[in-house]
Length: 236
Image 1 (cartoon, rainbow, N blue to C red):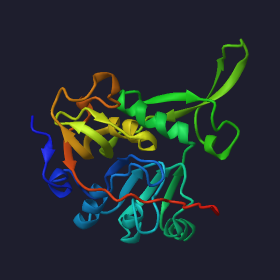
Image 2: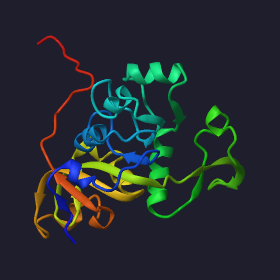
Image 3: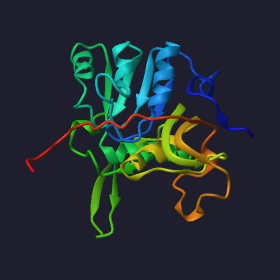
């Protein structure tokens, strides 16, 4: 099956619809699928729910879709760098479902493994636990503790960004960009992956592959912008 497409717009052809749920990889501005986000903006698809660790910044990442009012809801962990996100949330224009980072990653991974729900101690006794099923389990120390149930995320579409991949979709993510990209890729019905370099099958060391190509349906190669979210310097 041919997985490589010429550009992000063609890779998204036939996949987008209003009201869909999209899982997006990346951590801060590292490893975000900027090419597909721009293509979604140009397509004008609206009322979107995004499951993503963060919402980018005002003019980059998911932030460009917040500017155009294409996002209805965010399922996120950290949104502190986006002023437009804050404005829309505080004014009631944007829905927000907060998740601890580990919980969000596991919700994505669980969805990719066909697991509809799991129990965790994270969030017990906080607003995160409100309205969720509580169960008592005996831990390794023999003591009974309270856990809450979290649901797996099953997205209509996954968009992720890899450093290197072969034409079948086997992928390697570089350093911080590995955060959230593999689980985000797993939980979508269809996964579109943008990549810096595409190689032929067999060129990647099988022991170094972070995501098997079975999860990847469409691939696009492109040039990516290297942004620094918070630049910190010191005197020489």
